[in-house]
Image (cartoon, rainbow, N blue to C red; front, side, top):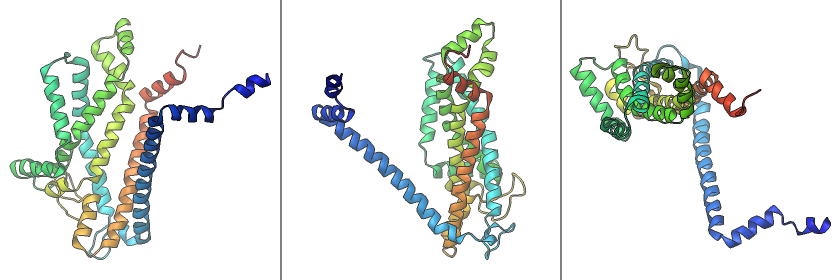
Length: 305
């Protein structure tokens, strides 16, 4: 018994022997580990710099209700940012999810229209935001006579985030097992009922991932909104009035060159807002029926009986 235990190689010796036989495995492991450490270090340095430069400059005057050149209040910009997120998602999410459902569930495989839509979505994802801003300015502000308003900015951002929502929803729907659809059809359910009662709830976590990415882009956008929503420092009284978001507010403060410390403080609030919105969205997605059923299926793959 002792001889058997003594002759049994340890895990460390096995890995070292494996690396000697395959030296490239060791190189790959070192490269992967170094990449992870560098990525984490860059992220930590960025967050530390923003917090160190911004937190000491947070003052009560920055959260006053009305903006003045003295307090540089960001409260109106925070309200405008939340309004812009809601408007943009209301305009983009239904179309993005609807288009993804058509591409996955209804369109025939090999359909030329499907290829055109996917190519268009991929192309739109790579267009710079300044081009979207110019298009929104010419289309919504000038041609449709909306002037610089929250609605013009929301329409522009909806077009920007539509490809992201469409592609992530499409991949989420493809990830739903075909056995779910076959079981629903076998029980007598129709196509529409299967899609909205079986497939779509199962794809909710993936769909919310796309929505979270869209929220991040909406909150951080500046170039397109300067052209379409304007830079008015107060709270927008309606969707047809101008208003600056938090990212545009930070840009304006830095562009003036007189309120650099307030701009750093705005960056801290913007960072906290993005993290908070993403956390709330993730928590909401995990509590939806589709996400709970998917979690239960992974925990009890063979049932509970």
